[in-house]
Length: 256
Length: 227
Image (cartoon, rainbow over all chains, first blue to last red; front, side, top):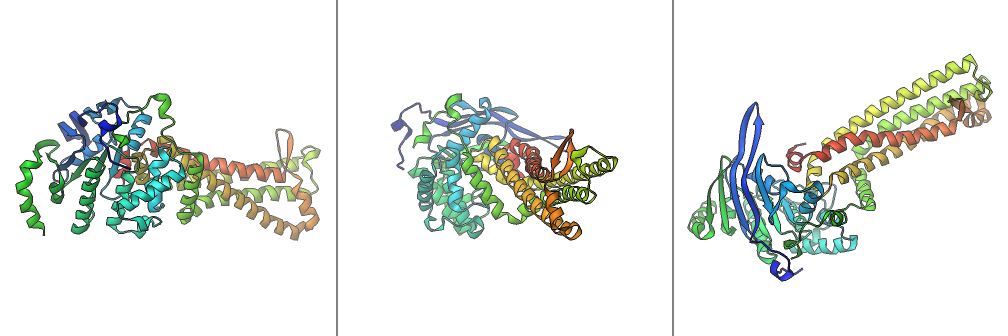
C-alpha cells in the first residue's frame, strides 16, 4: 500500500472533498424546535486535517453525522467529491460508507463478539475482498497501528487505546479518502489520547487521508491544518494553522 | 490511494461492490450464537419448550388411540373426533405461546444490538445484510431448538408410554396417525417432522419484524442508543 496522490491514479479530482451548503438540522424536543445546526457552509480540502471544535451540545456531532451520511439534514446539502449525498440511493450511500469514508467513534464501537482482525476485515468483506486478501490486508493494517500481536484478541481483552487503534485500522480497511472521527480521544487518558492523535496525523501524512475530527480535545489543535469553531449550531470562526500556532504553546503548557 | 478518485459506480456495477456472501453471513451467525451463548439458549428455549410440548401432545394422541384400539384410518368415530379436536387445540396453543416467546426474545436480542447494527451500517452494510444476519440466527436457533424439543418431547413420551402400553404398542403408535387433516390421516412421525419445520420457520418470521425495523434506522439513531 503506497500512498499516492489522486492525480497519479487518474480520473477527476476536486480540490474540495467535502462541501456543505447552508446545512441545517432541526430537532423537535418537548414541542420546541432545537436548531442543532444552522446555515453551516464548510469546505474541506483533500488531504486536510480539520478539527471541528466546540463545547458539548454545540452541534459538532450533528455535523459529523451529516458529513458521514449517518443522518439526513433538515435543509441544505452535503457534497462528497461534488456528489450531493441527498441524491444517493441506500445502496450508493452504503457504497460511500464502505469505501470512501472511515468512521472512528468516541466509544470505539468495535463489534464485541469479533476479534481485532475480524473487526478490521469486516468492511473488506462488505467490499467483496476474498477471505485471504482480507486477512493479509487486515494483519498489515493492525501492524501499521502497532497491534500486530493482538489480532486474535476480543475488544474486552484490549485497553481503550488499543481498541481505538483497532477502530483506526478498521476505518482504513478499504483505503478511504476521508476519515471521520467523533471525539476519538474522548474516552482516553491524556497520554493514550496523544498517541491516538499522533497515529491519526501519521495516517493523514502517509496515506494522504483527509481527516475530519469533531472534538473538544485541545491537544488536537497541534496537528490540525484548520480548526473550525462551532457554537450553538453555527460556525463561529475558522482558523488556519498559521493563525493558531501561537496559542498552542499556551494550551500545551496548561495540560502538562 | 485508490479511494481518492473512486467514483460511485452505476446501478449494475454497485450490486457487485457491496456484498455479504451467505457463507460469511453463516459464519458470523454461528460465531454470534456461540459467543452470546446465554442469550441464544434463552431464545432457543422458547421454541424448544413449544416443540417438546407439541411432540408430547401428538404422541399422547397417537398412543391413546392405540391403547383404545382406535384407528383414524377407519373413519372418525365421535370419540376419535373429540380426541383429535383436543390435540389440535393443545398444539395450536403451544405454538402460539412459543411464538410469543421467540418474538419477545428476538426483540430483546435486536434491541441490545442497535449500536452494533449502526456500526455495521457505517462500515457499509446494507439494510438487507442486517436482516439476513438476524433471520439466519433465528432460523438456526429455531431449528436447533425445535429439533431438541422434538427429541426430548418424544423421548420422554416414549419412555412413559412403554410403561403404560408396552414397547410393542408404543412402536405401533409411532406409525399411527396422530391427527387427520383434510380427510387424510397423518402419521405421528410426520406430525413431529412438520412440527420441527414449523418451529424453524416461526422463529425466522419472529425475527423479521424487529430486524427489519432495526436495519431501517438511520445509523446515527442506532449508534445513539445505549444498552
